[in-house]
Image 1 (cartoon, rainbow, N blue to C red):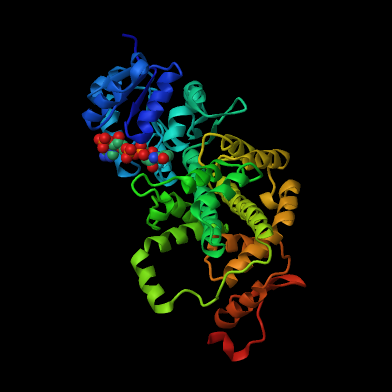
Image 2: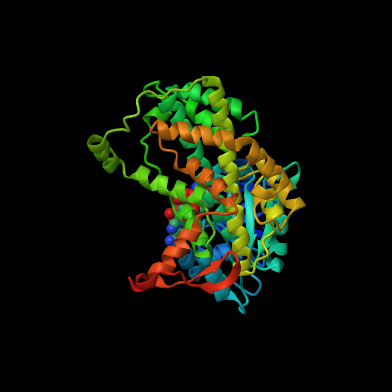
Length: 476
Ligand code: NAP
């Protein structure tokens, strides 16, 4: 039997679908899973793709089944498991082999793994894959980090399996070492913000306008035909309209309001904070997931504090308010994406990656969870101005912000007055209002810092450090 051109370790949800995708595109693939039963089950269910798949039950057998130099995708639980798997694999590998971690790794781990193999016969690629189960099976968005030379060696197979946006494959080499996993992390951070903003809008429709799940689903369905057209809006309509087979009730009403998280949102916030770049939408979304998980505490607090005593949630014109909600969501989304791209731009300088912003927007247009029509507009904006300081000052997005931020202001005001939590939507408004104001209020902070800590301040009428006339307060 001829040897496989690529190998894949880890036949969980993502790995098994990615392996079928690779096989379907005409690439012969060897597969291995720690638990042998999963390999047997996977192969027995591979149907007409069996001829393209070499199932292996030992690592020796697996490595021998791949033609050297071997590209090997590792698609297993992120973290220590990847280090363990690499150590198990290494003794069997030979010159030129590439280990490709396709899980949701922390990019700092990816940098460490990449550096550890530098100068050896082996190479490491850190590859972010987005699109969930369906994307892995039929076309994910793929963000690659590593040496360009190693990418070129796997480009053909990755291009064959990636999602296509109008024939453009959603895969690219983004830079050295951790670049791919960093971009995937920020992708997920933006995804957190997008999902939280959608949930807040749902909350206003449910608790403010007292609409049923199906009615809200209709609203999202209409929005999906307009400028908000995206995968997340599409699936929100579907989940809101789905009925529970046991009770016939809307399934969403029966789902516990505790959100899980695995780390990429938190990592996005940590890295943004490390570089001093505001990512308030992602921060609000991560915090909201944490608050959501404190279910018992929230229920106890509601008994003590009660809901805000605001009375009925009233809007003068219901239809106009729903239109405002659509525009508010668009405005807030612009804020979150602008922040995500600003974080990537700072990281690009910090880690010397030279991240290509238009390419990143391009490969997110299909396959990934945040795919949307909107990303095509971001691609155009960054193609015209690749080095712009912030997406919101590009002509197209500045116009969109000016057009929609009034709606965001009305929606946030109504929600605040109605006692409905909208931390992510409000964060976008705060971001716009602070970012667009040339003269802010940090002068008073600088004065306070100088007062208690003699930190000094620059004057508007000349640079250099100065101190205020605080007298004995200096040492207070
Ligand atoms: P999963 O279905 O839970 O499968 C986990 C896989 O990891 C199994 O094959 C498991 O093998 C293997 N594994 C766990 N610990 C291991 C160890 N110590 N050594 C060797 N193998 C080990 O997970 P998944 O959803 O496919 O996720 C895989 C990776 O993709 C993760 O990094 C995840 O964050 C990332 N990812 C997931 C999604 C998604 O939507 N699910 C999307 C993008 C990225 P056994 O069968 O032996 O337990």
